[in-house]
Image (cartoon, rainbow, N blue to C red; front, side, top):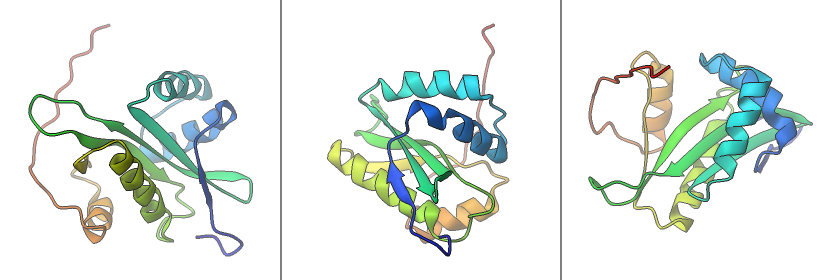
Length: 148
């Protein structure tokens, strides 16, 4: 983590939207402050979703979004929808701290496991997740059809 202090992990507030957008952009998901504010508002209203941000010295340096994935195919897993740590703070343990928060939340919700998806190009992320005890369970293709 930073040389000054341990980060504070907390639920987001509306004023975090700009920093959430900045971090989303670093991850390769272009987003404006307004888009992030709207998405954040929609997500935090749902009890089956949780978002946590990491703040250090008054600056938001990471976030994670997790939700309960209700499915007919599997017992109730939690699914990480997104995790990002500021590029200037990576490799210092913050991702691990955020994932530990995810796991605590998932247990509180009665989830049997935590799942996540990671782009095949993110080899550093794959090593990170494997170090945390996650294992690859399958490879797949992702499909999308725009409805607009």
